[in-house]
Image (tube, rainbow, N blue to C red):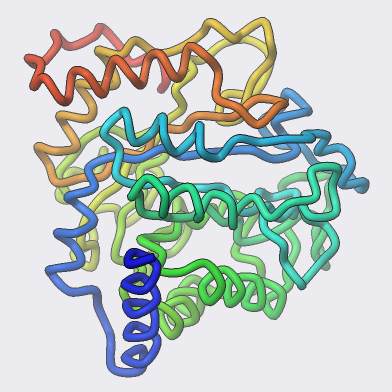
Length: 339
């Protein structure tokens, strides 16, 4: 109860001071850095398609999960020494993992029939973890888009704003938003998107995985690695990745190594259930994140039943033990198979 009251107070204070807040404070930078690493959870249509991108789905029943265990996700993260959950709220297919009022293309209308984001939030509060989100800026089904030509993006700025407002006002304080620009900006520029987010939660960090970086305060490193803010290789896909407006850097990659067939950011296929990066590799990057003051978001995809794979739970438990025991730095691997 106390955590809920404090969280509510912080959110109210952020909203009241939105007009005067221009940049996140040094104290907020330190708060986020001290979280060190978190679990990036990708669960959507692509979980059931076995493909990274899943265009053309018109029936939400395609998301056929009938259960999910957010406590298992968050407890696993807690046991691994993680400080936050980075949750996929919506991919390019437009399927919303919260009970949005903007569309029926949502998990509450699918067989599961629940607000998964609300359950993630409840589990985070239970285990003392913070919450961040992934959000696709655009959708194939928006005006001008084409699900048969995934490079053709749609635009619907008012829908984008309405969805972000729901997310920013209904689920408590958010540490940062990982905006995916792969399907375009959705008709609302990055500068306008930052301004829209900050008016509701000025302490929320905002980052884009590509495209213009005006106004951003966190540098996102998709398939990245530990790196100082001055190291442009830490986020090579961003044109001005060494820009002096960044306050800190994040990097992320999947727990599954590259393989043939199936997705990698989402649950892949049952035949890949024993494919996982070595705990030593993950621990080495955790140490790198701490060294450079980064945050490290390790992507782990729940399966068809909304549970993490056994091998993921075991591997993350190993990493947690290494962290708690201050294990020595492992020898560098020849190559990180996730990249």
